[in-house]
Length: 264
Image 1 (cartoon, helix red, strand yellow):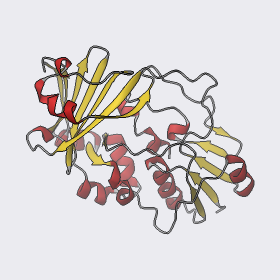
Image 2 (tube, one colour):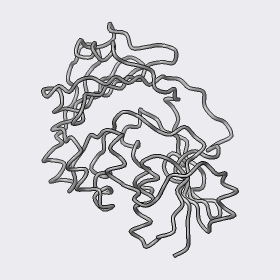
Image 3 (cartoon, helix red, strand yellow):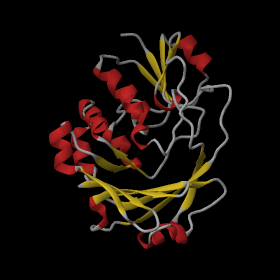
């Protein structure tokens, strides 16, 4: 097998390294990307992603580190009115052959360890193309399009002590021009608020269950809620684009947050 380079410090890059190792590649250089590393507090992994992790030998660690909620709910932000509920837990395992799991982002190194490979400082794509027959880019290194949309929303994050009663459900809260996503890991309860740019979550807009999270929330990033851009070509010569290098992240597209692992 020929040597290759993997660019990015995120879950997609770790999955790419694991997949390449399983395919027989042994000479892999891992370098940091130029974009800011993704360090969100926690994430939810639907069955299609947990299945990928199991195929990449991360299944035992996922069972140990992950929290498996019983159900997924959608509620109105202010009243808490239940709009819909879907079973997860045993239902997800039986129907899809894999669990729906919530994990801390800090657990990714244990889920997909890059044993024996050290993350090295950033190098330009030009340098990597000259040195390697193939380069897998897992983080934005070049613009996906020439017209980048302006941010419309701010993502706020709150980390709260674990509440066993609330940990059984992943809840999407729908408000006017804003949403919240509430879920628990083994270590904590997490709430993400997406609110219009230059605003912050206001208690009057949300059910009282979310008021402690509003008090603890801090801004994490700005984004365009309407971005659904995908790169015209997923490879250019010997450079392959995966995950965020193909399409920018959008918190409203919850099921797409982990597509980079499937790309890898």
